[in-house]
Length: 50
Image 1: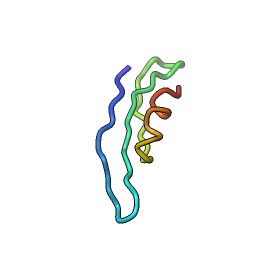
Image 2: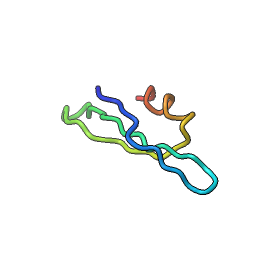
Image 3: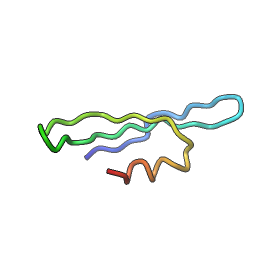
Image 4: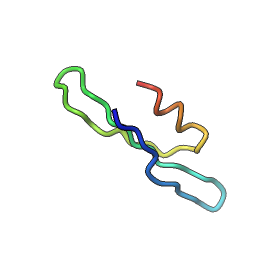
């Protein structure tokens, strides 16, 4: 399963990171991409979560 932090976004007051991970559907077996924008500290937790 591929996991990668793609971009680091900066706003005036916060640093944010966009994380994308591939998730395999249990029904069809097809892969989908889940995207989320979060603080850099929360990226590891997001990628470990299934």
